[in-house]
Image 1 (tube, rainbow, N blue to C red):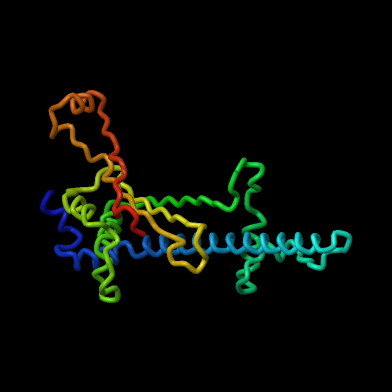
Image 2 (cartoon, helix red, strand yellow):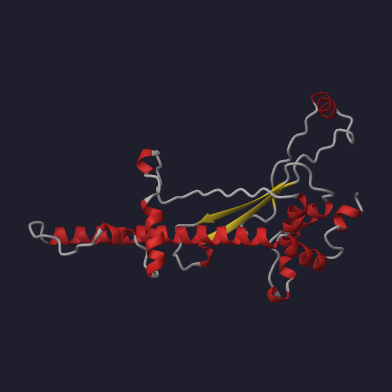
Length: 233
């Protein structure tokens, strides 16, 4: 198994990337679509908040100039919810904003901060393939000169991983830095973590922990490991 499993999805990095991209093509497509939709939603919410702040400032300035005169700026509430994009997309985003949970009833301190979770349950072959794509995607001809998504220490750990056991998982977390402008490429970053699942074998160890696992017939799930260096995007 130690010789077959590591080479089952390709012998060299180029083969692993090619085979992995074919096996996990639909899964990768779904993940990319969800990441793009989440990013676009966050951008729409940020634009909406900026528009509302500008309207509030304009109304305040108008009232300060003449508190007895009627404000000259009238904007419908529907227009405030509508991002400045195409008409069809405006209607869809407007409905999405309209039917979202009211944060004041959920004790949400920062209503502009949305947390979305996507769970993908798949087979061991697809996890192997996805890991290989993340490891070697920079070897694609269209990405010459690009750095690897996975840091060198994580690459070494993955090379030593013999197999992916029960409850193996990969986590992709999309973060938004609201302190930078919407056009800044550093506004969003993705963090990758990986777990080998129940990778601990009580038969290979003879300590007290191994004896306890044998008595209880349980195996702990290995904690997540970062696949990127600190500060990388």
